[in-house]
Figure (cartoon, rainbow, N blue to C red):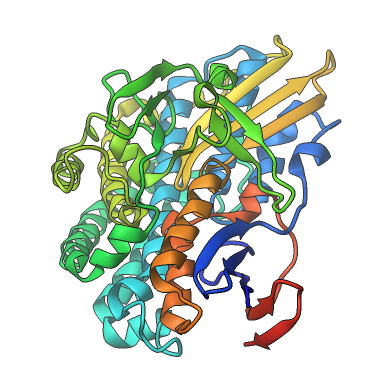
Length: 471
């Protein structure tokens, strides 16, 4: 008899979601979906607010990546004002972003995914957690805690607070960098470099142990999108968008984020509050694409910093073309941490970073503005419209989790078909379904601005809704 497996919520991710897996009469997986079930709706509650409040409001969407929302919002407001932030403000925004990437990627890799990667997908769930990592790999656990702390301290020294600092403002930032904090950050760099180089070496040794996960974790052809600079190198804050196909051919390049609607449209489905962006020339659902750490390393020509470029070259040698498996997001996160540490070192060496002028002041000159940055999880777009008084009339936010939603659902189906049969549904198989989602590191509170909590339950149900069992 056909059954439905429900995993709700998915564990070790940011926010709350659900997975449903449909088994046919023979116990084989016939369909699977990744749902986001909660809704808060920042796009609507922002209407009527003054444009200049938007960076502070939207960074409250998330406690993990508030910097990304503040930066995207600030850039949208810059466009409404029609100004370019002073050089010091642009440098400081990029520096702040480095701190967020370091702390966010460290959280994803060390805290959320390392139990799967180092203890094993089939390990005892009582041990397969951060406590188990502390017991089995104490040095790596200390490294993860320290690296995330460094990222958080960087954010605090620049903006005054580790979370929700309200420091990014339309036209720039609201305070210059303290010279003493600059020196303290420079002193952190050698330790951060040691940690990430050590972690990269340790992680690369595990790749052979995860061949099945690499083969099945959303390993299929899609398009990829990410931001690059004028040379085509990796860029997180001030670049243009590039889209490539599954063979690595560039299908759209140097896209001004303000023109994103020429390339990206959004669909909706009745079973999820998460929107479904797609590449317009291919239509929906054929226009599936991915964003995020591995996507960024797929679309760029290199990183542009010495050590990260070496790691990027090794990363790209794994396959002849773009790396298809989303398992490699874990690898890419470590490379991006290295890139951000090197970038931070370069930014702190700029004399202009201590300049006192950090904000361009103006009145709204345009009724519309788009801001785009690369958040840790992928491309983030803020699109605003205002009236003659500068009050918000409309907002559209496209976050990384939205861009990846079709790939996540298809990846769940791929993993479920490989590891789940009706005759034998193991805990390790269900963990792999969740681990596929963790590879994307979705932020569900960003994607639909979620509220609420739910206990972890797995239900086995008939198609008529009868519950066969629950854990």
